[in-house]
Amino acid sequence: MLIGAHESIAGGVSQAFARAEEHGARSLQIFTKNARGWSAPSLTDTERRAFRAEARRTGLPSIAHGSYLVNLGSEDPALRERSLACVTEELTRCERLGISLLVIHPGAHPDERRGLRLIAEAIDEVHRRTPRFRARLCLESTAGQGHCLGWRFWHLAEILSQVAREDRLGVCLDTCHLFAAGYDLSTEKGYEAVMAECDATVGLKRVGCFHLNDCKKPLGCRVDRHEEVGKGAIGRVAFRCLVNDPRFVNTIGVLETPFPERYAEAIRLLESLRRGR
Ligand SMILES: [Zn+2]
Image 1: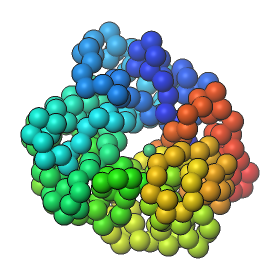
Image 2 (image 1 turned 180 degrees about the vertical axis):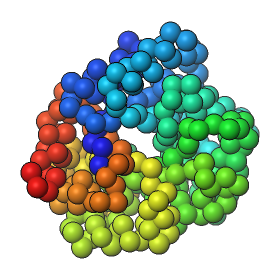
Image 3 (image 1 turned 180 degrees about the horizontal axis):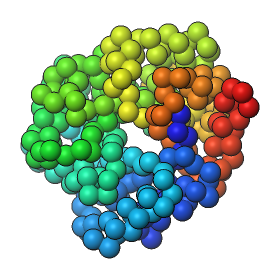
Image 4 (image 1 turned 60 degrees about the horizontal axis):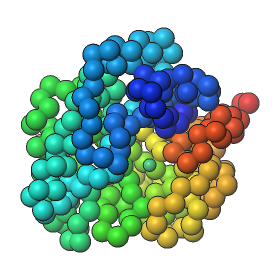
């Protein structure tokens, strides 16, 4: 696994690489714009060039995380169009910056089947608006809070099976969300069972990246509360399994805990869990 962290873009997107280097990261995730707003000033050519130069200089692969406001499962035409426009804009930023993956939350709807259909249709529309893009969308597994979809593997598998361009879509597994959703990866046996279920439904080849978070609350709590790796209800075993899993040697895994000042320590901990060290 290419262990890294979600890095701040304060001062411009290109600034994230130096932060990742400081933290000893082998990869990074960024927001390409303010994740709690709809629109943002457009990306300048200077910023785009600076980002690509930093990517080359450091050799660090990057992924992006989309806005929290988006709901591709919405029935409301205005919110739906805003969400479509936002994801399209973010995917366009990724394409211009040379970022391979944009992680998005699938969306929310009180009726599972209807919601999954709406999400798949929305993704098809984003794909139509971004033809020939190399940057891919990755649907993040969720904790299943409220009406959020994507907390069962079959939800993700259903969306993948419904979209016209499955080759343009992957998934992002968040360890905290999996655990909160009831997938117990806290033991070796549990980890293997969860991965086997993921493989049988979504397919492990669809896993584009991981979010490496522990969980503040117990198994199956259905609430999204990230904890620092090894300090929550999941514990170290799951992370040891993950960083040593030969199926994910070249897969990006990033920390998303709220304390960047402790990223370096957490990355060192994860690196120390690699076998043969
Ligand atoms: Zn996450």
